[in-house]
Amino acid sequence: MLGDAGRADAYPAAVVPVAERVASNEARFAEANDAIAVVAGRLPPRELVPFLCECPDPRCSEIAEASLAEYATLRLFANRFLVAARCRGGEPAGTMVVERTERYAIVDRLAD
Image (cartoon, rainbow, N blue to C red; front, side):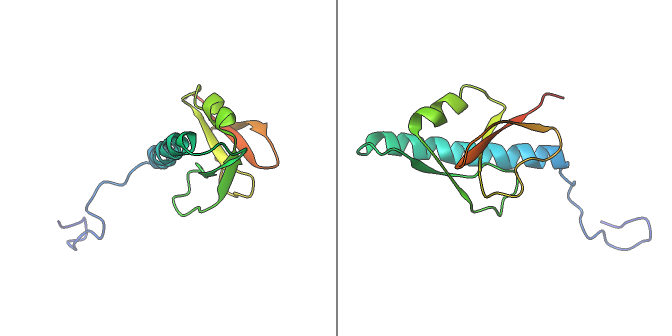
């Protein structure tokens, strides 16, 4: 595909808007955590379960420990995400921390 200057465009695919990419990343991590919760529920009980940080950074590898009850409560709200306490990318514009513990924060993606 040729650009305005007659040269091939370096990025011919449409650029995904930041908000859409953030929502996609959060949803992907939340889906993985849902699977972790199912498996953890089948294992011998443990006080805390290691969940993936659900921040918008796809490279984040931080862990947020929560009980299954805490995680189930979080999932009652579709716009809320679990962010590891040590994460540095969990509070982008358009969000609000609704709960913070020494192990994690719960971030609410505010409606537009």
